[in-house]
Image (cartoon, rainbow, N blue to C red; front, side):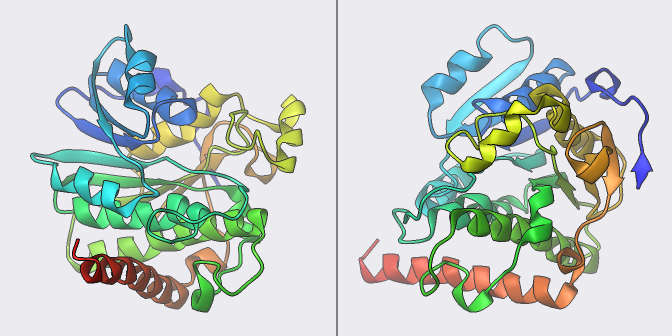
Length: 296
């Protein structure tokens, strides 16, 4: 593990002239990240489900903000957002996510948790990739190390649904997506980098409805949201190698300051990453096929 002693938001570089898109940035880690990047000069675009709340959240903050509708669990919304994009885009931060939620299906008929955390960001990244000049940051979790993928049932259609297992699997999928994306970028001689960021256990509302929320009562085990966001800020702005994994430097990666940590063994499996890419593309293609049959 490589430590970055005492790195804080005060060490952010000047980002004047840079454009950043952050999904799910209307609250929590995404909002903190947006606030800090705008403070140092970036034009920050918040892709959110509730544009009114997001505009209220950034009202009066220093910097330049743009708020646009984006629901990463709705592939039609993802496509509309990407289709409307024009001009350059330096940094995409795939921050939107849900944790340990009950079984539910999206408007496209996909598993809600898997789509929000992985399939939607997969599609968004691929659609915007031609615009991106610097990097894609994927927000994952240390719990990816407990994740197990079933590529024959990525969308939880045949297995009994388990909210926490689905969350862990989706965050492993995020890690593997970064690995395969970086492989493809490198093969194409692209300067764009794919970077992973884990906030550790940050005291946000992400797990408020989950039994795992009990850990938020033990502050000595967790990061305050502002400290958890440091991993995202470091991953978005610092000169780190492609497919780096930035997370807290404390025991278990639960809390602390940003450090270069290591993914799980499964998260570094190139064959699994390639197969996941294909399985995810198949899911997206199946949705497109259904839309075509409906005449959409």
